Image (cartoon, rainbow, N blue to C red; front, side):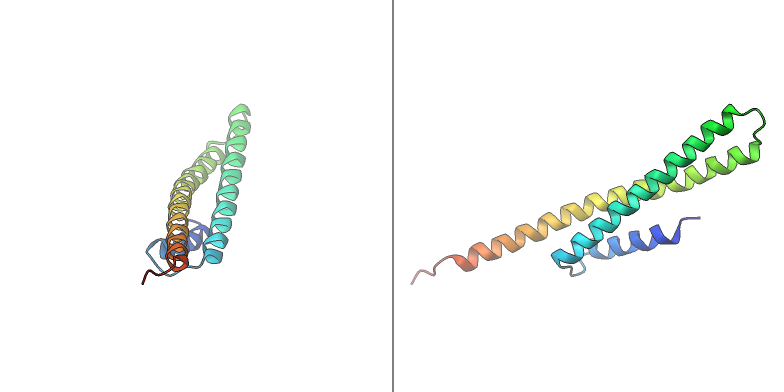
Length: 114
């Protein structure tokens, strides 16, 4: 089952990416949240991978413990992939908005020819 925290973050990112109005500040805040979520997921996956190595090295480990860690990694990886993808799309959207803003500034700064 996906983590509600990451699902909510993914939902907020999708809303902005679906052309919902967003300020530069909102985009920056969402980017920071996405970066934090990505780092947290990567840390959780690394932790599970370390735990799996420890479990497989220990002859006393149960298959149940190993299976549990494998399931955890299998649940986390798709969330990480999705969050990385949404973060990339958010970067693209932010660049588009900045370009639009710069173009408007350039047009408004031009002297009118009469």
